[in-house]
Length: 115
Length: 114
Image: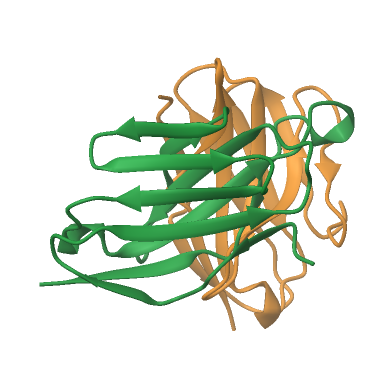
């Protein structure tokens, strides 16, 4: 089982729709969760972080975390063609030992928003 | 957030040679990391660059192949040694800054080995 799993997609949604991106993780002790957006040919850009169960909203983006189910998601409302990118889920392992500061990335979900 | 630059942005190298990639940050950061992203793949952590001591390498990566330096809190280098075409990839440095536990990435170095 991979440590962080995402559906690789591609996920295609029409402009104006809600895009839902999902991620599961295996280490139940993980505490911090991040979503990155990566445009083709560019480096990953941090767009959301979430640490507690529930929802966290930032503009058109909402991150959702359910630690009991080991599940984190990203919702993009009113999707725009400019949202077309690869979205990477990243999980920070429990604190301690040599894992401090490290992130484990999922394989990414390709999102295409079509006009 | 920190401004991160990498040099070179891209390079084409011959098999058997070595390339050193530089990562410069505009402010002091607590942690720096080096990643590899092969075509169509996600990010794989190569090592944690430790200031003033040897880097900490992930499974599958060794110092002889990927020597790393970090002489201060704003700068690090990654060398890809004795390159083969399998080393063709994007190499990224990232930093953790302040209380933000996510990482911020440099623009990357696109390496092609012929």
